[in-house]
Amino acid sequence: MDHKETARMFKALGDPTRLSIFQFLRSYCCSTVGEDGEVHAFEGPTISEVCGHIMGDKKITTSMSFHLKELRNAGLIETEKRGKNVCCCVNRDALQVLSAYLHDNQSTSSECC
Image (tube, rainbow, N blue to C red):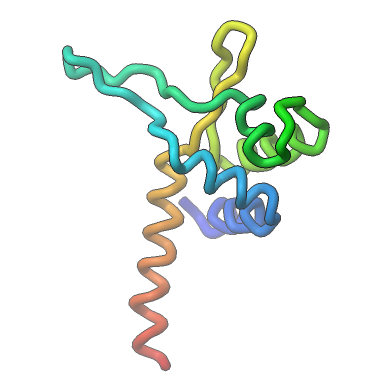
């Protein structure tokens, strides 16, 4: 992943509401492994549940839609339509990118200070 994509992720997480949403979604498992060993679709909270946790009301507002769109456009979350609901979860690949970036910078920054 190039620096522009990583910067887009950090920019999206720079907003306190989006950071709260991201943190909330991190607590959910995004995929399940069946007894047959196959990975099945992720199971995350619905957008209404995210709204309820973050805003205290399960009504989806334009503000919440905007924040979720920003997180999705930055590649930080994924969404999936399930019947009448849309479920969302953290993109695990994005977590690995951010972790690798922070880990790499931590090891080089200790050498120069």
